[in-house]
Length: 257
Figure 1 (cartoon, helix red, strand yellow):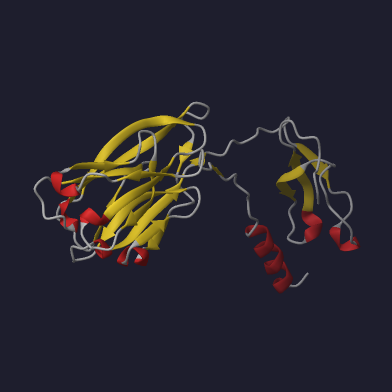
Figure 2 (figure 1 turned 90 degrees about the vertical axis):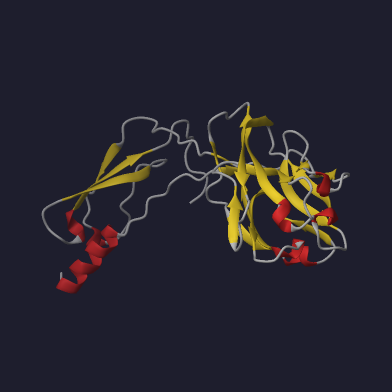
């Protein structure tokens, strides 16, 4: 075997990828519902979703101040039993900056300062809540599905919503004071953490009895997958001595190959 061929073999063996389980995105419990904003924000107080829901969209009217927020679109993830905990995020004085919920929490409402001028700076806090779940009480994560969207749709009357199964987690404000100055929003989905199946039994070894140069397959026993490789004291493929193989608990074999 030439030096170049040895390098190719070693490079191949050094770049083996290992699969890791991914989370399962929880869909909405039902079609998102709207919460009408019936009291002008100038009176102060909270504009919020119904209890147990988080914001998925905003509908605005034909003016540019906070009184034009007409509706929040809200939803909850399938199987949720309500909020696990809630915290408030301060937004006072934020210009060209993000106001975002803590990790694993989602936007459920905004607080408007009393006796304010209905401008964007009158939003003083975000209410952010973490969902509780009866079946999976401690297996939630919002990793892998975080994102940012430019909300040009807030520049005029109409509705802005995030993609299906997503919830708002923050807003980005520029240096003006109208609704259109909410330049961007952050969003995330709620995922159930992946469950990892244990091996059915201790991994078994498959002896490599035929050198690969003769051609053909080096494989695990039927129904098993590779978990390791044992090599000898040389550097070509004939030095692959064993595959270590295992199968997941409860497996009935391969579904497809």
